[in-house]
Length: 363
Ligand code: SF4
Image (cartoon, rainbow, N blue to C red; front, side, top):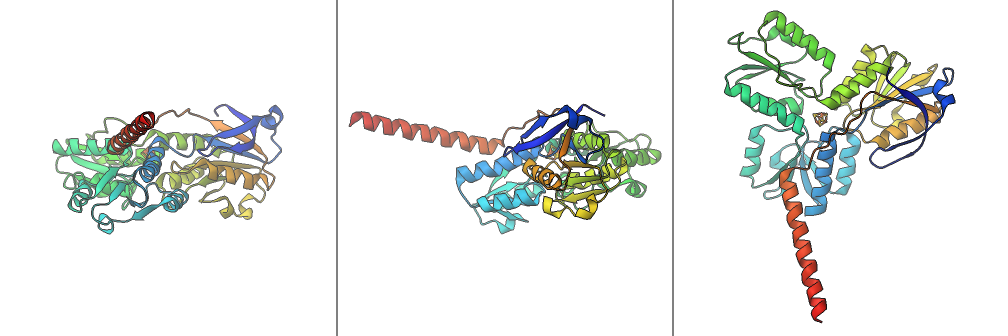
């Protein structure tokens, strides 16, 4: 296991700052009810960028701002942005002509840009750059006439977006069983790509099964399962075997959050549950438990995790040990089209301020 220490939660910052006090006695306590708090957890760089994109767009252009699909798969984030003036729609045709629309972190197929152009929408693309990377791979291999086996979950927005880059070349492989149904034109010209938020272990199982049938199957040039998904799964594996129950904070439509529950169970947790909010925790889950693992999906603000810790503390789980297996520092800059408009607005404000100062000086 990685380095861990006892901590008592004493405060929480708005973007998930963990403010705890270390005590040696708590760290060595085996008998008290305790929480193993996974780190990394919560917001990844792509989610942070997508949420900031909507927030900055609201500040810059004013409400309403339309967002195609949930900007990230989290109920709380979506309802918070709705209160600020974002309107979430399923398709571009629900957006009034000439309005601003933001595309979600999960990415969109090229035809979605085309529809936006036809409706004269101003599109801001909040697709995570790591999803965009997979789109580039799909386009490149399709241009070289490969058959592309896209490992992912049928119907997930990211998979729909990636598959839309080259529908004639891409086949979806949904889990190890899906591997048996694949047919290709040339077994020497096949590559697999994947959704970014899958279970690492299950994906490797799917690839192994594909390779039994297609020994010349090529791998993506770099990992498609993103760093955030891998890190969150890794730390959960580290704590799972010690946990009577693992509570994952995340929404049901969040692929990476659902995977965390599965990974926890596979790695030895006696039970695992997904909750959007602390109040959804059933006291029966905690009955007889001495160690509770807590983590959160990549689209979850840390304030929700802190509420879970408070909820657990009220039930005797006052010792919190944060288990850290990676230090994440990656950040992504805002979409170019938004940054350009923010810069222009700042220049306009500076010009107005200078003109006002000149008028005052003249007076
Ligand atoms: S989970 Fe990974 S791919 Fe998805 S938004 Fe976060 S960093 Fe990007």
